[in-house]
Image 1 (cartoon, rainbow, N blue to C red):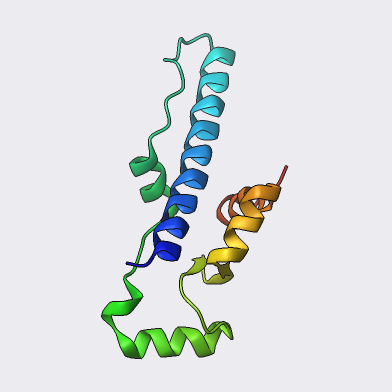
Image 2 (cartoon, helix red, strand yellow; image 1 turned 30 degrees about the vertical axis):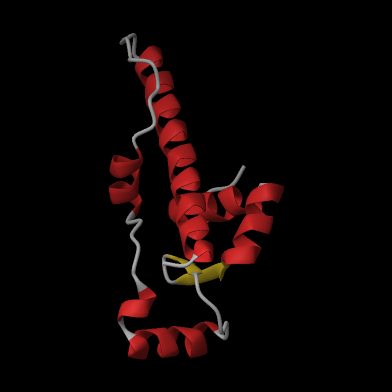
Length: 116
């Protein structure tokens, strides 16, 4: 796996962890309103990844799929981040979006249908 792919996976994990923390805080707030005690929020990336269908695919394991995605996305490089069938960007674009806060907003909007 190349460095750009590793970085893209790290960025996705960061965004997933952020969503997990948001989910836990929302659950704690709801529990508090109902008079129940809720444990301190703890991000669970694995559960949140499953909840939102986050997965990874080694594009280099299948040349046919790689060529198809390059053409379909009109983006000739990997890694590529796709969320619910929508192409979000490549490695350098993902880093820029993360730095500006835009990546979390895009992922949140696509996965949850909401934005802040």
